[in-house]
Image (cartoon, rainbow, N blue to C red):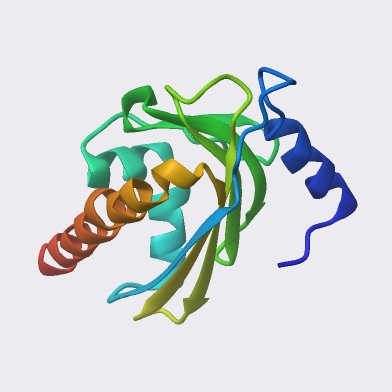
Length: 159
């Protein structure tokens, strides 16, 4: 995955160790691809809009409308900064679990493709602490993909 120089420098700044003599190993990558019976615009909005995100997760979220702003999800359990928003195409975030050491971030990239009836979301989560990768991979399924499937099916049946 190619990053612009500015994004690369941002990522490096977010991944700096809070203790310079104690490096943080952040090399694990999680990739997942999921398909939903909903349009791309709806899927993007559900992950990018605070109210929609809160509705499908059942927990408060504060998501920015522009790149460069901070975000929180799951009632503050996840936090970070939105690096890129390309409506209906891509969301990129410097992402961290709130109880990770200060200065430790990973990068989450959602890529959307499809049409007005079906959407594929490719998640690439890079720079994870090695000891957290398996837990986070399962968390994406349990905290995002399963609830989204249920959320979209309820929305379709109520229309």
